[in-house]
Length: 129
Picture 1 (cartoon, rainbow, N blue to C red):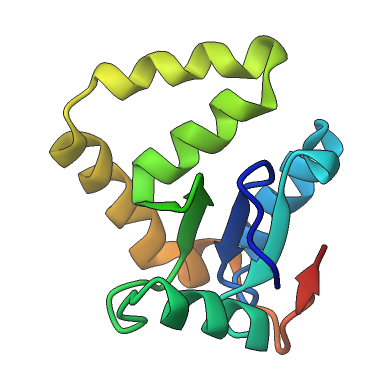
Picture 2 (tube, rainbow, N blue to C red):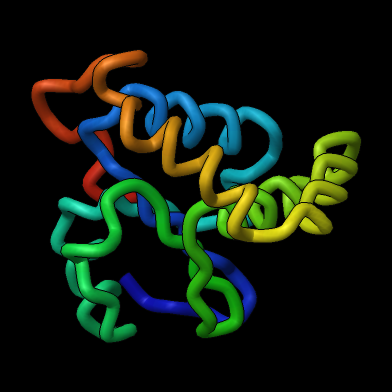
């Protein structure tokens, strides 16, 4: 997958039902033309992780790449929401909450995502340009 300065990339857990629902939400609310998507398990996702020297052992749910910078966890989610625009961008106000608090909540949800929302048997999206 080619990285463009103008089109951010969302890397997500392709087996996670919550993550797939979140990608569908982003696409439905105008994100198809604002983002590129790839699962962390896809060749494109692995290549991007490697290219940005991201240790895939430490990343298991989301990476957001914008302007050749990487964002993780709650910051990634908030930056994606901000880029959606419209009424959704108002949620970016939560960026004022200290990252250790935001990420604590994020880690609880991410750590339980398979138990609470389920796991797909196969990755639905390998990459979407």
